[in-house]
Image (cartoon, rainbow, N blue to C red; front, side, top):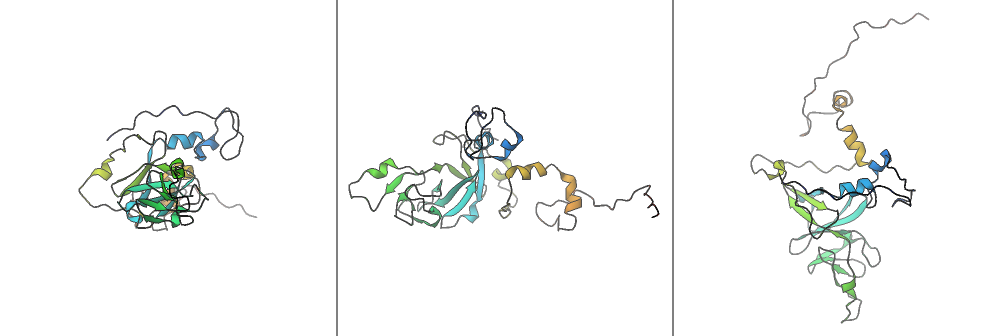
Length: 239
């Protein structure tokens, strides 16, 4: 498995304001784990990794809106089958590129027709004069993307022109057996809530004992559900 080069030092919070409008403190708190904007410590840390943003099978011939690390993005394949991941809102008037047309080597904004390639370069601006070079001054937010093992990964950290190598995860690199990718599930809570709960294996046999646990591909019956009985049950006191 290829390892990701050592990440550059991530700055801690200093005096000033956060990207979410809260005052910055000189010392990080537990709450900083749940904020993942580009200017937050947790956000900068998570952006040092290639992150799975979609199943490859979910990306059809039309753009797909995705949200990752508090950024609204649009994922697409151009007419040469190159993957692109851009900021969802057009640099011109903020229209959603999720409703754009994939054509002419990129994705075209549905509002005024600005055309972007997979690296955010503006190729055309139909309403500008014929010989205008203004499009050369425009660059839409973009991130490198790669497909591997049926998943699409994005690197949202620094150095996007020369990102670290995508690790060759053994499970995804194998060519034997049968692959099955679970349907993407969206939860209305913070990423840290999910990971904080993951080590708590005991709750599986209690909370999920009647919810079909074990029938899913991820549901191994490794816990035996037993009815607990007190050895010395307390006697109810008489009224």
